[in-house]
Length: 326
Ligand code: MAV
Image (cartoon, rainbow, N blue to C red):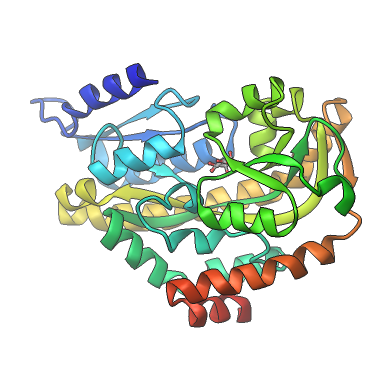
């Protein structure tokens, strides 16, 4: 991995290049996935919209398939203003730089897709965006996401008994580990690009993820049991490095903000509308076995006090109340 980072850093030195006769500004993005994933489609839509509005003086580069590492690498790049200029990111993978940002994707935050939609089409998350910009110099320019996260495991996990002590990977934010501990699992934070191997070698027994990513990265090969805990509907900010954003001409900044909102909305539409279909495709192909979780209400009951305590610790109790009230 050190090699990857070194190359990425070197590439960064050629960041915004000016060459007579060619595009003057190059914006670089990274995706964990190939062209079929909703995140990559979101990023492509952003390219299309910005390109259309700004013309020939801009070009784009995209690093696919996790070529530049995973989101914990991307967030460092964005914070430092090197290697990439924008990406779609899980808030829980930005916790190192902004401890409050994972509030927007903590498990059991949204009741359903309508609630999630109401939150994302309001400005209730703005205080968290401001904190991210202040603490990490990363600017939210739109929101993608819309996948429902479920448990994926080597063996079936269908009730509280089977969940007790279940060794599973969670994202790096402490609130993720706290909630999965509260629901009695045994979580550990492992880098996303090590999850497949960790399950294959038995270091962990499973993880949790949404259909689009399970399908794109073939996680079903090692974790074919999907339990419909439906514990999260993903909120995935489309973010730009503040260092990049401030260097852009003003007219381009306005275009970027508008394109970010629109590309995010398009991405949400794609991922949320394809979610059930992707689960079905994997089930039909014999790649996964889908089970209900017998006591989902219990999971919710165990999680709420942990959410409350986290919000209180951040001084964000009013914000959590406002999100719940949407
Ligand atoms: C899924 O691939 C996405 O939600 C992505 O944004 C996350 O980083 C990843 O899961 C993860 O669990 O880290």
